[in-house]
Image (tube, rainbow, N blue to C red; front, side):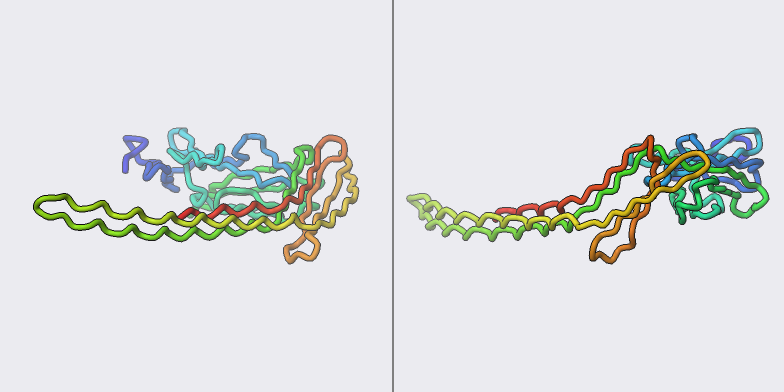
Length: 248
């Protein structure tokens, strides 16, 4: 373990992450990881960011997800903070998950992060919803099972033994293995029931979309999208075919 600040270990680095000393934190700020301070309603959740200022003025932020990779070196864990959000929750990776889309129509989600063990040292932010990002809902059928592997070929016969005057005979060639079996076809895409309504706010008109898998057991999916600015795509695709089995 090495100290990032040589004189006083306000923050130390261990296994890539920075470790925060709660007693040395003077302020906390909250925003989104992309710095926009907003989230796209109905789209995948947005990741938040907490920024801790320590004695001396240096600042440390929580880790970020970039291009499916975590940027953790010198960053703080989200577990360094106690999180709360009105009408939403913050998961262990810092993503803001809205529990009721309709509650976000006319008001932002207020998020608070406090230092573990020092609740008074906290930051708050109003994360505003956006409805002009566009929404894509992709549902697919069950993927096909992989094919069975082919059986191994038969072993070749042993060669004859040699003597003092002659070499032994070559062994017989082994039999070919069987081909692997084809993979199973993917299941057809699900039948969908789509209902669209219009919701008017003081600023804009939105489409409230409900997508239900006919005969399915999962709950309906809801999304909100601006009528005049954002595309909406709903797709029901067949499942991926299974891979063919390995040859013997």
